[in-house]
Image (cartoon, rainbow, N blue to C red; front, side, top):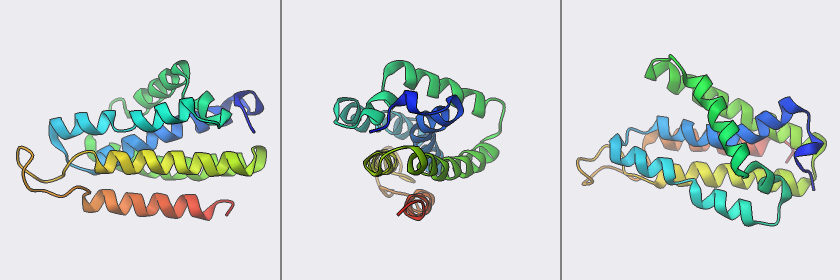
Length: 166
C-alpha cells in the first residue's frame, strides 16, 4: 500500500488535489443556485470521512486535515481572477486530465488496490456532488437531480478512470 512518502512532491500534489478539483468541476457544471451550491459544497464530506477512517493508507493520507487545506489553497490559486465560463472550462479539463495523471502515477508507484480505491473515491465524490442538489428548479421545486452538463462530466470522468491501467 502506497503512502504520501512514496511520491515526489509534484506527484503528491496531483494525487491530493484531484478529488477536490473533481468535486469543484461537477459543482461548476451544474447551475444549482446558492442553496444548491451549499449542498454541493458539503456533499463530499461523507466520502472524505469514510476514506479518512478506511483501510487504505493512501486515502487516509489524502484526507488528513492539513492535506485538505493544502488542496484547497491550490484550488484557490487556480480559480483566482477567472470569469465563470473560463473557470468552468478550465476546471473541467484540468480535473479530467489530473484524474488520468493520478491513476497513471498510482499504476506506476502504487499497488493495484490503491489505484482502485482512488478511482472509487474520485467517482463517489463526483457522484455525490452531482446528486446533492436539483438543477434548474425554482425554490427547490421542479428541476432535475443531475443536470445534462453534470451527466456529461460524470460520463467523461467514468471514461477517464476506466482508460488508465484497467
